[in-house]
Length: 190
Image (tube, rainbow, N blue to C red):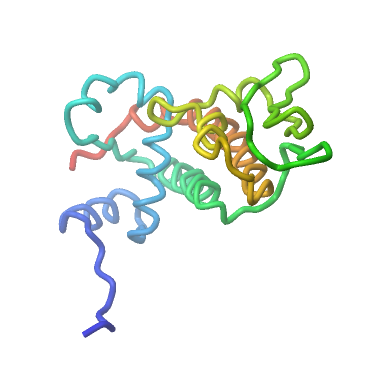
C-alpha cells in the first residue's frame, strides 16, 4: 500500500508533445524544473502579472529543445537553492560581533551592508539587492529576522544560507531574463 510507484501529475498529452518537438523525452522532473524557471522569469511575471493574480499560470513551452534544457537546468539550480540544498556561501555573508544572539531589532545599513539584530551582533555582506528581494509581498531577509524578534537566533548559519540563496537567485534570474525571449519566439501549442 505504501510502496506505490510515483506518478507524475502532468497532463497525459504533455510529455508526448514535448518528446515529438525535442527529439528526446524530458522527465517529469525536467518539466518541473523548466516550469520553476519560467515562474522565476522577470519578463514572464511582468507580462502576465494580471493573469497570475486571478488564474493559474499558463506555461509557454519553447519549441527548441536546447532552450528547454537550458531553462530546466536553471530551474534545477533554483530548486536546489530554495530548498537550501546548496550550502555554499559565495555571497560572503558573515555573522559578526560579541554578546547575545537575541534579536532586539532588525536594521539594515545600506552604507555598510550590515543587518544588525541588536547593539552588538550583525550580519555583513548583505547587498541592497539581497535586502530588498521579495517573495510575494515580503522582504525575505527582513521578515526572517522580524518573525524571530524577541527570541534567540538559534541558527545564524541558516540566515547566511538564505542570503546566499537570494544572491544566487538574483544572478540566475538575470540569466533567465536574457533567455526568456527565446522561449516565446516559438512555442509548442499544448
